[in-house]
Length: 424
Image 1 (cartoon, rainbow, N blue to C red):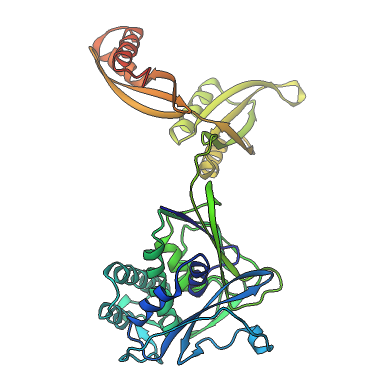
Image 2 (cartoon, rainbow, N blue to C red):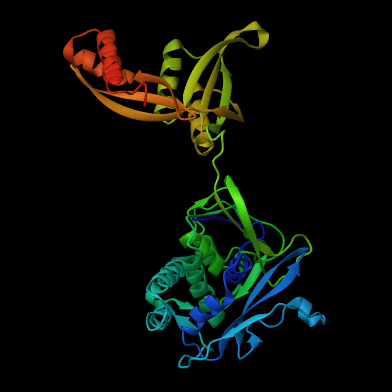
């Protein structure tokens, strides 16, 4: 199965997502068939090649009786023509699309459609999540939410299309870069609001975002696609790259291409997978008692520090002092740095990122005459590297039995050897 990664350096909207999927190989016929199953009279879709800021990709649009619902793109108004059109029209009748819809009406439309069950369920989840965000952002019950911008027929097609695209592409994993929200203000049904729009901000809670020129670059439909479908928000993960697709937006921006990039690949077997990033945090202290240092180490380790150690140093004015160094993962940096300053009384600390090789680690349990002891086992490139009984287990069993700690430790090592922990 393939893995996919979204590059949202120019934001994301529903049409951009579908354009990227089409550019990467999603057949427009398959997408058009899903749209036709909605039964929206006169609605069809278009996928055509275009360019934005030097990037060539696919521009996806929803058509109402052959005309783009959003109106012509800027370059069309300048007399330019495009090629490689892919039009598919839905011919079923029964639903109008010229009015604002509530969540109940959209849910009924999808439930009564001829969409395959997986696509129907995924589309319903997308709209439910979007409705919950709108309700929370505007402080009203979800039953009273009436979609304006996202209740329009093009947004319905975008989200149902996204559900169908994911079903077709069947990603093993979907990751996404930090998301560009844009800047300025956007006009909505309730008037002008600052970017990001309220529902967009609600949907992207906990997601790494940033701003940049270009107006609204991430829309509510784009935000709900990310919130519902993305497995993890990270920089580009290791993969063997197999394809790239570009979904183009309507805007022609002077600062960067208005394009969403979708990368497809397979999991990469990287030899240095054991290389990891750690944050190194340091501060010098010359006015803390020995007991204070002991308590500081306990607090930092209990809060999740990977390691804490002390080094004697010579400070200014020839005062002897202690360099406190802690290692942690990046997400814990602020919490542990704050704890270091609080407990030590230091006025500041410095930090930097460092790479380190890490052995693969696992925990085994072995039975001994004193009780069960956990064993830490390490491997490097699949080869056994070392084993070590867990100190706290040996300590607890030694105190409970009255036996010397070293006897419990040796018994755990012998049990690990008998269980083949040194060889497997």
